[in-house]
Image (cartoon, rainbow, N blue to C red; front, top):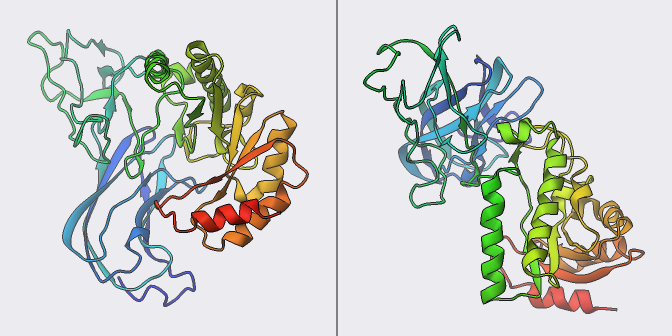
Length: 381
């Protein structure tokens, strides 16, 4: 696979195949990739799309510009679909050559299996008539690799697939077909995993952390990291609530703010804008979120300051939050080196907006070479 720009201006060079799948099954695809002198290796993907164009996987493959034959994996859940389209190849051009071999797609077995309240394991006979019990018919089923490789708290795309071990007096016969239901984590990009918005353990952990931060640091403000939450609403705690993902997120941010003020009543609270912005990510069909995120903003107390980074719809976004009584910080720099133009655009969008408290220099690449220039432009009359 090479000469990516031949045949289309976008430089997309991909193999596409429609594949039949079983709904609500976890799948793993394995492929071997070799590359030589590739200039845009980060744009080599395996993408699984549904008939309506929804992507079912977002983890990066990690193909290097030049590498020998290397095994790569993607993992996805088919959700309620029985057919998917699998794309393998290069997006957006560049130079170099890829070789692809030994592509295999199969049903997976408990990759990144999650065991907690709201994520039960259910095992029945193939016809569903007999339900088997953990502890009586099979030993506790866990994946020791989930969130533990190479260190605790780190998730990888591919983990081991743990065997289900039978007890001595199990009613299950060795080799018997079973129907098994379980919940699993999904990694996004490079190991990102979202927490549950509802699990009680989350709030116990947050409360302990805020208590420690208050005791040892005593900050004037707390910056909540609600940002690009790409998986939400699937476990039984969330789905069983009868609420949309937006309502669950509203409950979550409300509880997080309450926890902060319980331990530090006078502290200010800041949050990123995107997950509460109807002009950004608080919308329908967002990544692998189970339902609409609309209404998430209802959980924001007006005292919460919004760090607004919606450069694509700055005017609408700033006006929306100002209309709800929020003060805002403009996150006006994201590694775009035309600093003057970027600041000018934000300044024009915020000209008639009250409550703009500050500007933020926000770099993805730890690049502070434009910081002084940014400060000068912001201070310019």
